[in-house]
Image (tube, rainbow, N blue to C red; front, side, top):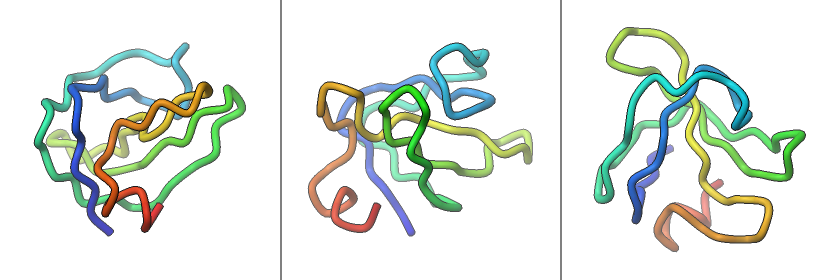
Length: 77
């Protein structure tokens, strides 16, 4: 599945805002996702393989319902 981010988001080492930031994903970037995760923090995270070859995570929807991916992407999460 692919998602396109509509805002710049942090890439993280795990699906939680307490995990280290390992990069930024600029608005407009399309990411090939491995899957999605409902985080314990109330957020929806997408997982993807980063440039380093490691699994990374980015928030697709926060705990307040703020969406960070376009509508077409959100439909496939």
